[in-house]
Image 1 (cartoon, rainbow, N blue to C red):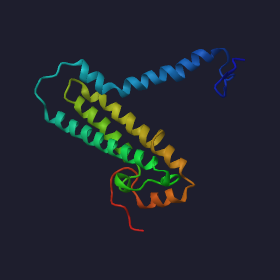
Image 2: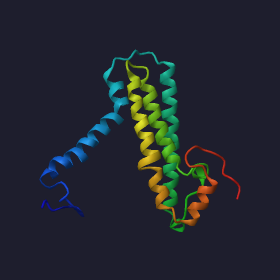
Image 3: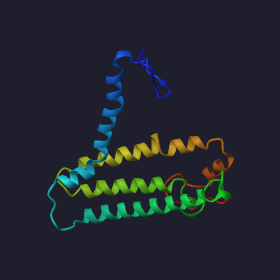
Image 4: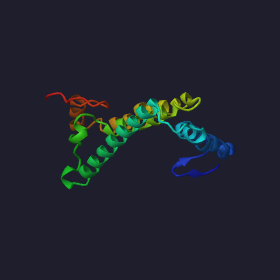
Length: 175
């Protein structure tokens, strides 16, 4: 027997444990990290003309608005959580009034902006995979689904779900 890693018994892979953990943990992370960083790799690897293109401007605005949205929503949540009166309450003010996950909306816009900026370099369209991976991860894997499951039994959160858009800013419904 290999023993334990944290609280997980490692008998499943037996003698192949080290190779399997390398492949499943480290190698998989390296591949995903490379795919996600493609916009930066492309933008820093290719010669770019000094002039700014319309695509660059569009990409910058996506990035900038995403950065603003994510920063403001994170600050609002930080202030909310640090107020002892808000313990066990759901944040539904500020940007959180119009979206249950404005921080994730901002994150998505940032990655879309990075990918758009890459469209002005040769073969930059390949870097769109970065945005696809990030959007998929946020929407289907670790972002929104985890939080929605965490508060599934919270009645205040269920009311919040019924009155507030999940991601895209929208006016709250009247109660």
